Length: 511
Image 1 (cartoon, rainbow, N blue to C red):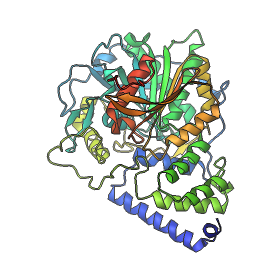
Image 2: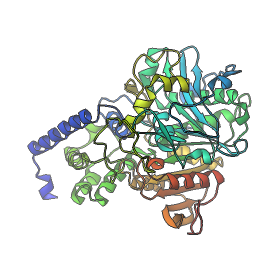
Image 3: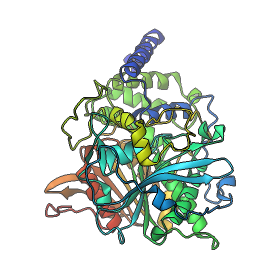
Image 4: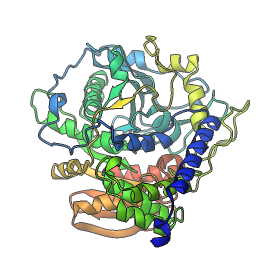
């Protein structure tokens, strides 16, 4: 490492200056919007800034402070379901299932309400389970990504005003619910100004719980239905924390019982140190950074405190890694980036794989007055702080973010809650190497060893099953937003998860 260590502070300053200018140019060319592909990296920088006030202490299973003890308020929901029914979205192809959208109050005194979008199953809606999807960020919209760029029934065309069907929508397997949380994200709002500026894990989990119990009151036919929670990225925090909150309240006889059966998290933030170490390991193993730089990072960096605790050698190596990976989308290292965000007069021919400029198409669509009217969104005029964005530009402070959520995964396994973790194997931000390191910490006994799983005669990915009903699976060829890049494999994954069956180890299986 003698040659590497001899790098002067002047050359490092030059590298960082180039990186900074490149970032500014990228923001200008990309329109300056905040996307899910950027927010997580920005959050990590803020979380480990030496001036950060974010509480990183581990989850305490016995005490989630004042939030778990907050009084549960179930409001009268009579007649609201009928009002929320969406007749037809602008530019929408014909469908044979019902869809709903509207607001659920989560804190009446604060005037805080979450926007939801719900699509019933395309078949057997009365028997298939209820599946909640959460996107991460923190601060990114489940409407922007989950519903309209990943697993929902529609995707937005390049004209920004029409939709096409997603042939691999997850409402083939379940009744699917999307919610924009916390307040300040998407169409969700609060009349209390601090609510849309200050967020946190505990508050989000408990607001999501209040949303859910009131939504179930509005849709009582789903109260006793098998219920599953899924999500990706920073939803690696949201999903387990909501599940923990449900288990806590289920044990109190005077509350609504939610029939939670399992959680599914993809490319999930679950352990800060391992997520970050695994990221640099992935960079080196995929020829994005030199091996000696990765070795120096692993040797010199702690990833357990604030950045001021890291050595100059650590920061120098990280600066080089950042510079080397900046020109590509590390959320899918092989995917093209968006070079032209302009809308087209006529829709481009839809592709199964997501268009790299889809963020811009979705922004244009969601900000159309006729679309908001059809969605029953922004109906009160309370969203005065911003136009609709895929990721919030008003949330400026995050109060708490545990360094690991692994204790929650152990809790679920002890309570017979199914746990599946999946990784798109071309994601470099929360890559498969990170998740494998986090799972290794758990030291779980193996039930089924590592093997390929198949779809339509091809390898869909690889999987390993652990005793205690936990499965880890990769999805071959998929980036951070797995259903965007490999929708057929993602649908197969969710179908097996909901059915409680192992991913197929034979080429004969076709689902």
